[in-house]
Length: 138
Image (tube, rainbow, N blue to C red; front, side, top):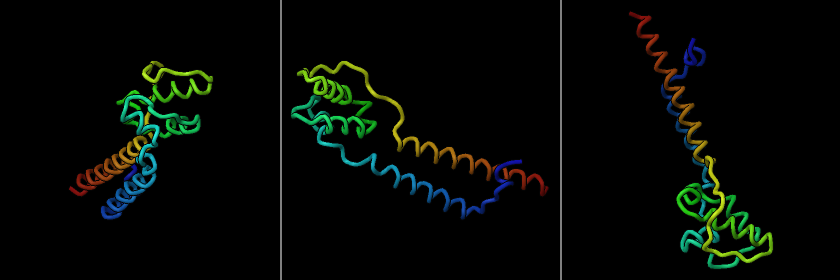
């Protein structure tokens, strides 16, 4: 017994369902694609922080940093080092970028993956339903 036999979905309804899911994923993921903060822009432009930022601004920059900036630049380490230095009350060398970097999957990526898996499962169900219907009628 397949998913398609449990929940038969007409083709037009399926297409509409996929479009609505894609739109929902785009709307939910929209905040993650918002313009980066001034801290991230400063680091991304110069490779270091050229201005002084508050602990709150640094913390917010780390938690809202886009995945591509985090992965392809050293800004996560630069901002994290500055934050740790400010919390400890010491001066930091902005060119020192050693330290652990973040990783993991961003929310928009997870949403897209879920939509793809659900859509793929639905397409597989439709294909199995058609295959079963075609061989049953012959």
